[in-house]
Image 1 (cartoon, rainbow, N blue to C red):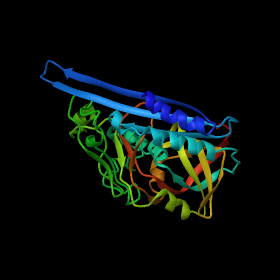
Image 2: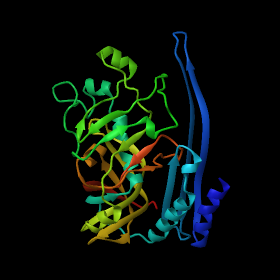
Image 3: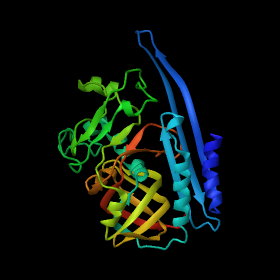
Image 4: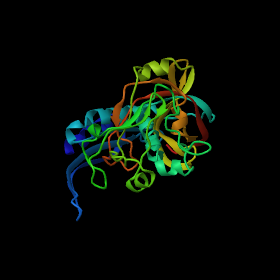
Length: 322
């Protein structure tokens, strides 16, 4: 861990910048047993490294992060290089008017937003008419198209080796939420499943994967006449559960794209946007990678997301915070 921290701080110091961050490696065991014969046991682990690098004048901020099942999956050199490069590139940002923009979202930004769909895909709220996944007139939207046909969103325990059982002691299973744009499943807890005569969902808690495509971030930028490149989002809070609408801020590297090139660092935005709207506005998708997407920089579950190019992303106001 000390060598990993040094890899980040040496890189920042060589550029004349200041580095801070979080590093965590955890292991543990969990056992559940009851008088009805349940016995479940698992060994868990996870590791994360995140770094924020700032310029001495306070105008530039860059971020890098990695999340893995164990420490061998953390590339500290890459984290430090990314954060330092972003800090230098984001100095002296200019103001750009808020509005609806074409955006290129790096995988971390996608990972900040798309898992919110999984958290919202609860069968009970859909059945009771309180959810985006409620069908007008009653019932749910299972079997209906809810996203672009390129979108497949799953929770797979094989991606999340740190958690092999549900909170109530059942082995986790692969759950396909959206397949080729069609809603396939919602999450049934044991109580609601019994009440509705359904099977309870054995969901890998928090794990989420959005299957990707074959476009790279440079290709997405090159194909954009005018847009915004976003490193990540921060301070994400719910606004409307019926549309899965959230608000939050861009952070640690936001850039203007003009005529296929990144031209300026720009001031951060506040946005009001729904991840389900995002998945209906897809223009291009890249290869999915594992990201560190939690606000507290903890290891967390496996979040595997591609970069996305989207149209009509809604930035509502400017933020002076770096």
